[in-house]
Length: 63
Image 1 (cartoon, rainbow, N blue to C red):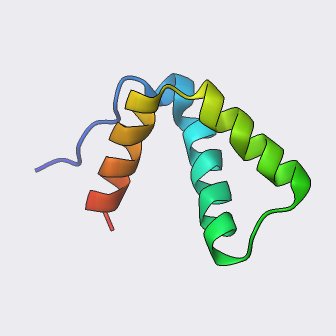
Image 2 (image 1 turned 120 degrees about the horizontal axis):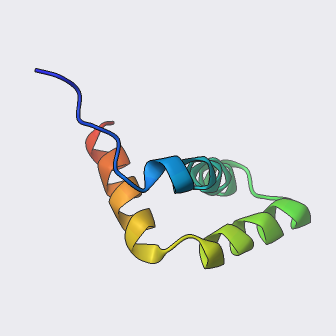
């Protein structure tokens, strides 16, 4: 059995979704500086919510 294929949106949004996840994890563990907070807010506005929900849902299943 092969690994599941990357979702179609990943090529376009994968880097931003990954960075958003890094910042969210850091926010939870140690907090963010002002620049990082602004970056996370921008990513939250830019990334379509349905894609983020799918991405983080997949991530939760793979942990």
